[in-house]
Image 1 (cartoon, rainbow, N blue to C red):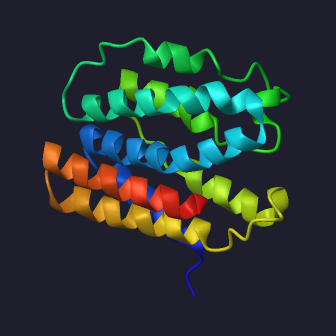
Image 2 (cartoon, rainbow, N blue to C red; image 1 turned 180 degrees about the vertical axis):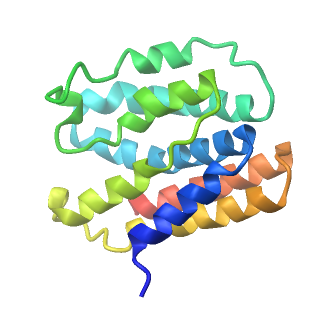
Image 3 (spheres, one colour; image 1 turned 135 degrees about the vertical axis):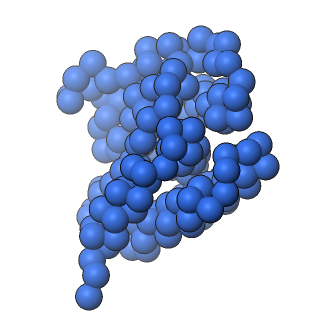
Length: 180
């Protein structure tokens, strides 16, 4: 029987063979799926609220960059400003959903990269007891399935504005389901 970890590793290898532009799209989709989780986290802890308020602007810029637009915004720097000062920073208490927005997303705005672990790792940690009142059991599996779907699209089709929009809409819907 194949483990979820081995599937994640295989997907990471496949994603690593994508073009830099496709890797950026895939990674921004991971951040997009994190948005609903970040909003949920910001409701629990006010220290993350400014990041949750700024994240949609960062995602809009990142998706535009994926489509070929210049960054032309200081949103990456504004997001980085909320980054943790260290492992004990209060912004990380109980939940690390903020990291996709204060580290990964600003980096993706600046240059292509591959960041796939955020949501799956977050769903795994929530399933392990960080949020005992919420049954997240299948969240990690849903994230892995979303990544597989998007990797297959990016392997078959060139990166176009239409494909980017399709992946953005998919990532948004999956993110809402993960937070649901």
